Length: 296
Image (tube, rainbow, N blue to C red; front, top):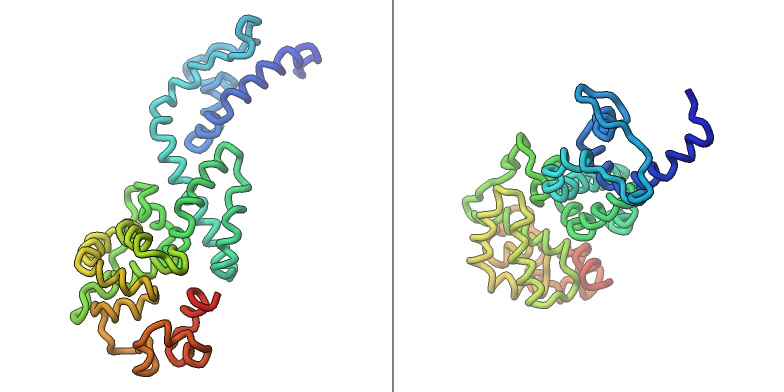
């Protein structure tokens, strides 16, 4: 039976008060509960244990709607809510970035689109989403571009602790002539993606100290050991160049055999030689490095 105009007006203000005061809680519940369970919990639908009927708020408390029945069942859940939301926002950001990568957008286009990733969400969630983008956006993109499984990205960044995710071990290899070669390339690749041109030694040192934590678990211990052994030499080279193959060959952890980065002996002189002109950069296979770090 439809509500009369008078009845409708009677319910309007309590309804508005519920929305104003508890919208954030309801949104949190929607992320973890079925709609029928939420409606039963707040008393709009029947459940096995009858709920108290919803009545208009009294004048003395019309602006403060008692809702302990609503809050108590999820109080424990809210302790974990922040971590859960960050995890889910990370997974949401990953899915959006995967769509961009699949649509063949350039890395620069994706970075510029970061600010729009969270705009489709409600305000209460868009702030959490933006926190993930601001703090982890470039690292998420960097890990995805290294062909890591999207399902593993958020656990790599320790934003999610889901059970049952496969460990990323298939690609971890020890080279006979350079045990640290692969982890060196991954670490330098991370620095190259996240440090600005002309970074200071202090900035590079800070990035080195936290860089290992952004690598998949199988690499972390090896990375920490690598940084401990090679930090002074790494910093001196990284001030000049952050091309992974060159840096890791220069510190001696990757063999020079196989497909060389450099085209001639003079190329070992580094970026000051590579980037003097396009022809030299091409002969040293360093055009991309010069574009990103010297010519811009």
